[in-house]
Length: 220
Image 1 (tube, rainbow, N blue to C red):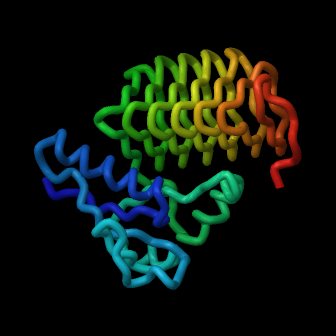
Image 2 (cartoon, helix red, strand yellow; image 1 turned 90 degrees about the horizontal axis):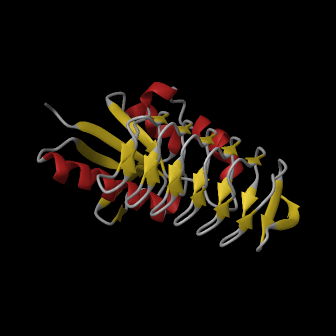
């Protein structure tokens, strides 16, 4: 089988981790499942350069130049996570063009459901009956327990732990090593700070942090 031509959106650390996951998939399969064609980023200063051996091909709008490629998004930080849909709209790509990348060292239950454009990095664990929306990134060591639901465009950062039946609305960011009590709901565009312990529902468009987590400000 010919390898899938893969293009990663963005040039940051998460993007390189996704690239590493694709290489790990190739190694585990004993063949080239993916050929990483390059990166796309709207920072013109990076165009034509190489990052960790991967060429920056151009901006997001240049995705149209690669009709035979599949894509995955690595863009989204605590300062821009709620803008993911707008950022991806700059590619003009349909949802079907996005690939889901799962590192071989991640654990994903056969009873879980993953959307398109999802990236699951090493050490992450997704338990039975969890549902992961489209364009979600789950970073190293994060735990998504049984029956959790993660909405589209979310980010679950390294070491975060979601207990069972947690419902996370779209466009949320859960910081590294945060813990979410079972059965809670996080509203759209909520942000949970690093190391926070969430013991009650989080309203939409709010930032919470601390142990126990408390309201700090609106998201933007």
